[in-house]
Image (cartoon, rainbow, N blue to C red; front, side):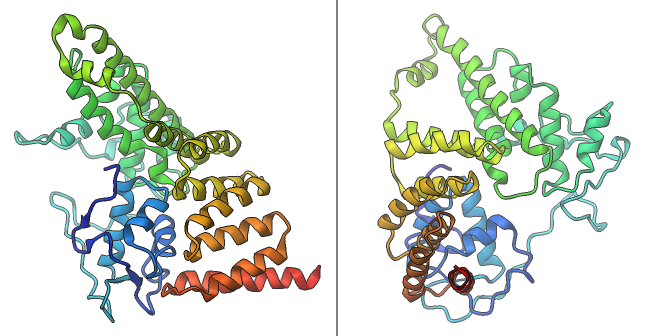
Length: 381
């Protein structure tokens, strides 16, 4: 999913302006970092589609987050005064009912106790085929792999094992993509897009990853290389085999917007991997080609992390110009001014942001705290 859907199940049209339910407590609801990030951007003043676009997250992940926030009573639709009762998540089938440990620990401390890989049903979907292609049991696991399974991070056991299993076959394009030698272009493409979503570093943005920050980037890049290698060989033989799928892919030119999107994704990968300066170069290139608001906001945040306040101010100003009534954009601009030492400008922006209409209690509290801190710093200057 690369574009915002017109509707989301359980919510309706993405053109609606959602609000945060009064009294909703993110801490009690155990809202995660990505969920809190999107929750803080929902203020009743902008359509949901704009919030999803500006999040910088993969669209499929952003939609999942909004759906979950709605299910736990965090979001109100237009006209609602109270959120519907939170819905209990469906009970998984075929999973033991014993208590499961928190996501930061591995439930199988030794490889011998791990479950066997799931059996494929005769009616398995292509997605299930690809995701079941790697041996998550990790036979003869190394000390490094066992230590990785025990890290105190925010990846569940299956995610860790998939990344480790893929790393084992990183030099074999077919094994890495979970396909048989000689697979056609359609199968290669299906496998690549399925796995690249599962291990995309941006999917884990904001999470504590430990050594998996590096492992995920390595596996994702290897997956992209495997896809390029296999589709390249298929394109060269397309004339002899009559394969029109690879030929069509080869002949379709890449639009500037697609290229900008590719640069943005690569920049996100570098940023998540810890290379903020390298990410800034790609963010700058993406913004020059297609200065859309989510690119600008992510570039400003990256510049702040890289301690480049002048660049952060430049990007944040442009983002604020595109969305002058968005308190989130104003807050980002104020943070950039503050990092650049322009406390008076930061105070002015925050005061104006608090005057904007917003029904997001979380964001409003953040703005108040930011303003109090800026005024404290001004009083000491």
